Structures are given as C-alpha cells and as structure tokens.
Image (cartoon, rainbow, N blue to C red; front, side):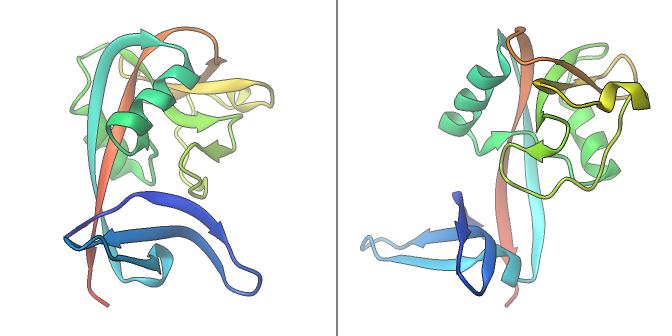
Length: 156
C-alpha cells in the first residue's frame, strides 16, 4: 500500500491527471502516473465539525488529510454518509458545479434538484437530512466539512 500525495501534472504528449510521489527511507523519490496503474481507490472520509468557509475547509483538508471529499459514485456517497451525524450538512470538494478540488474528473453527481446545478461562484454542500444530496451555496458561508484521505493499492 502506497500513501500518496497528488499534484496535477500536464505533459506535452502524455497527459497525466495525477502524479504520485513515492519516497523511500533514503529520501529517494519515484514519480509515476496514478492513472496508468491498475488501482483500487481506497478512500477514508473524515467529518470535521468546525464551521469554515469552503476555501478554509479546503486548506484544512489539504494540511491534515488529502483534500475536501471528492465523490466518484453512489457507493462513495453512501460511505461518506456513514461518518456524518444524521441530519447534518457539510462542504464537499465540488465547486462551480464542475470541478473537484483535487482535480479529478466530475462524472458522478447527486443534485437535490436540477435548478441548483447552475453556474456561478458556488460551492457544494452534501445534505444528509436529504440522503446526502448536493446543493450549491455561496463559498464564503461557514459549514462543517468532509475531508478524505486516500491510498492506492498498486497491481502493475
């Protein structure tokens, strides 16, 4: 199991969405592209019950975990729901309704209703009083939030 720290890397011919850094005891670093591995996404979600703006929450998550929660499918949304006290709302890593804060592709969505997925300077809350469905709110409002930590199991 490799603990990863991700950074976006764009190469001229070969685009790598996430560069993974592996460091051994001697300080030697090895870089490889996470998207080129056969990988199982092993995500741990952490609920932080400290109201912060979306940007403050993102900084906190990046300092103490990996990033604000990015959700790839309904299974992850349900896994995230298990760490949240019933009926609570929390920031997740989606902003402007198109971008995950960790740079991952936005493909799965779970909007409360379609009218709340419009454009604007909006960040996204998951509402666990409503099955974890998502709603847009102004990013400068303060709410608790969900971070994630991630490890990759490699099977090259």
